[in-house]
Length: 375
Figure 1 (cartoon, rainbow, N blue to C red):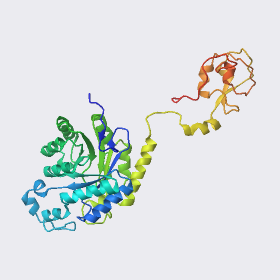
Figure 2: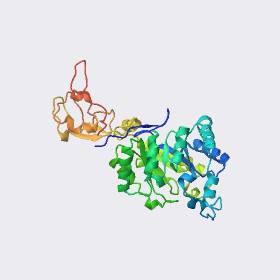
Figure 3: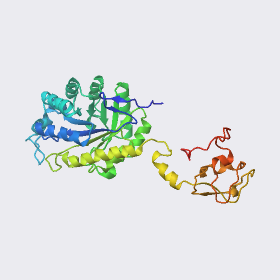
Figure 4: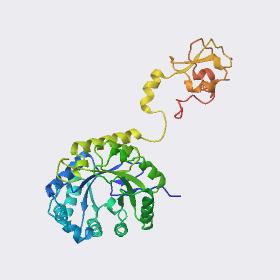
């Protein structure tokens, strides 16, 4: 039997836990268009929107692609170069630039910084930067050499599970466990945008059931924010969504990214949803006290009752009464008890009438409490 998932500590303030706030990642990816100042602007926006972390993507092109793939012509409206290699190079930041972005995010803006490692060389670079976690995208969730290299850093791994079935996912979980990795799995549908009817968010609680030792999150590529909010309500402990300045910008990710107003609204709504979800405990809430005092019903004499009378059910009815007497949820508890005082028709039956509170220094039966949490 698998043990419950341990907390994944990311820094002094943030952790991925089973009960705390969902860890929200603003995925900048390459939506910066290769523009360093735009990248900084997106970092600042992510912080203002309430995200916990910003995330970029890092590739070492010769390590990720073979030479023929880099030489492939890449025409089209989203291209930043004549070949795919030239296009990808245009969008890449150097290690020095990543370091500057990291310092800007963490020291000036005050938001966590990390990136997806798209190849083993990029794992090494991110490890050298000391990122709080390494993201493994869906394209590498079966890439055992990369997973092994990432696990060997000792850093937490967040692994997206797009383009996988449950059998593949069980193998991934087994591999990562054998590698002694600290990891979380993110439900994902690898389509840009992903059709909402194919998101299958019920997978999230199912994965939590199958893998109770692993935190389950959601990496969303759908349009809008509703499904991502629902994913958190379904139990996602991590949420990743792309952030853009403008959905009409050049690039394949922008259309399924969130603009600043959407991102901010999503984060705020998630925090409201989390507050509303609360605890799995049904109990009387403090805010209900006013309603109870105004509308709570209690036991009332259905006929004149004299001292010494033994109560039967036909002696009682339930009404809103003044003063408030024994709560109606104690109806069956008082049957068979003996009246210690006289009560007229329509009088509230008070606890002292049945010796259910201390009276003149003599303890009677247990006092009548407020309505029980489970009632």
